[in-house]
Length: 193
Image 1 (cartoon, one colour):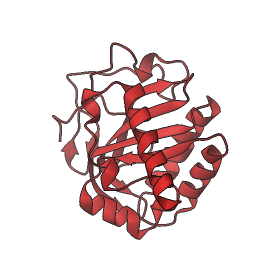
Image 2 (spheres, rainbow, N blue to C red):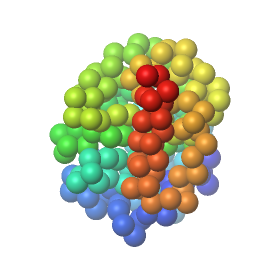
Image 3 (tube, helix red, strand yellow):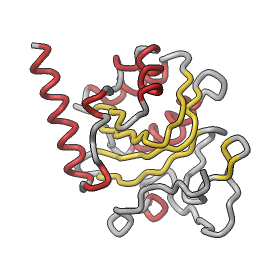
Image 4 (cartoon, rainbow, N blue to C red):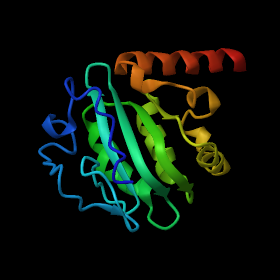
């Protein structure tokens, strides 16, 4: 796991550690010293600890004018034992919402497992952003992770599913990713009507 690093393709345009509005502002990284672990496996030092012992994140891009953030994850999302959603909501998401971010792209290519529990934090997150036209979208989750999230009915609060799992987001600029997500959401709404 130590060689899985956060996507670096937009670092010339944005870094969370240099963004005064980011919850990770001022963080310093040692590229040669691996200290963070998920279970017994060291992870790349660029991942940010936010309170979870099994899930780490990286804000890859935030746009405060267009009100969106793209956050990449690595590890095991465990709400059952570690209450990871509480840490994510309180220590990262709430901070971004205060800075007027209301669209969240959750890049889950490296989330290896999901263990659900209560959905209250997801509901709170959705309620915090929906009135301003905001949303939460899960991109590129493994099928077994998606099934587990669906088992806990997280689709009430987050857009997720196969249509979002086929996005080649690394080849795109952040604006185009958000636009593509919104087009998929619009198509889904039209099909429901």
